[in-house]
Amino acid sequence: MAVYKRSYKSFSGEKISPAWRFLVVTRYSFGELLQLRAFLVALVVSAIPFLVALAFIYIMNSSAARMALNLGNIPLLPIDNKFFAKLLAVQDFFAIVLTAYAAPVIMSPDLTNNALPLFLSRPFSRPEYVLGKSLVLGVVISAITWIPDLLLIGIQSTMAGWQWISANWFIAPGIVLGAFLYIAMLCLMSLAVSSWVKWRVVATGFVFGLFFVPAGFGVAFNAILRTYWGHLLNPSYLMQVIWNDLLRVPPLFNLPTRNGIGLPVGAAWAMIVLITFACLLLLNKRLRAKEVVRG
Image (cartoon, rainbow, N blue to C red; front, top):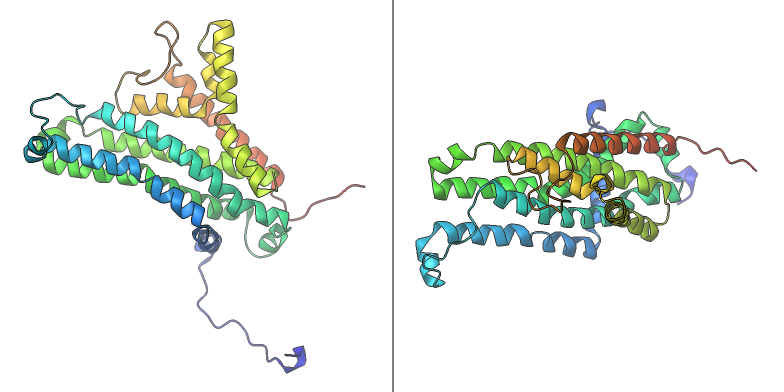
């Protein structure tokens, strides 16, 4: 249809409040992710730790299930703070895989196609843009970490009774606080890398490698200098130290040490804050309404 045959009218739909404009970015980014079959498969596979933990909780609290499996009085892993610390360590890996895949999908195309000026030319700020993108990753990570964990705590409390929840009341707040810190770090790290690496496949490799390559250098650093400070380069190790502290398990539970000594909790907190701040600086440097090309 020719342009002169069109009749233009002002927008008559419902306008979004300025405070919630970032949800527009979130909605369309979710739409892009849900169209990818590989992402949906990875999301389903990420539910396996939850299902295994759910089955274990049922078996531990059901005498009929123990008899059916011929377990009798065989001692199994108790459902306590150490149980959830181990579960979080497994969920950490799946969260990294999903983040490494999803972040470049929702971030790199905007920069590859020079779409960022279209966002920022409207009444839409850079913090709102980052918040809208981060919310996508935050929901995905939450869906496989603290939300199912809280459901498991509720089921365990119902089956084990008030005595269990009164003795382990600190597990739920510890999981939620640690999860929000972990989500902030994962989102900013993955978005920062995706904003600088425009090719989606390459960005996925960079995000994934960012959690494992520096950790390998840290292990080598520890072996050569016979120290434990190389773990500062391992984000997963840092978060596990923090989660152990929040869940009141031994600080180095389920973690490698050197002569029984490992990274202090304060050092882990400081490094996580430093990583988050550095990622914010990288995003602030990269996300601009215009790009100056110097010939």
